[in-house]
Image (cartoon, rainbow, N blue to C red; front, side, top):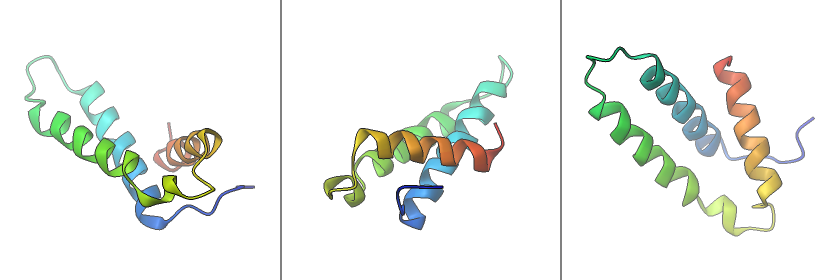
Length: 76
């Protein structure tokens, strides 16, 4: 059971980060990866700068829980 109630936009951003990451990792050597790399940077900024982390729930353990939740949703 989750100890944290994450905002939906934060969960969606972390899930999108993993989907983009795996898409980038699975791309072939001749694929253009610029768009995916930029998307990862954008999502990283959105996740790291989210106001949720400024509150009392914004602990390192919460960050790990968010990552685990997103990985489960992506199915990896």
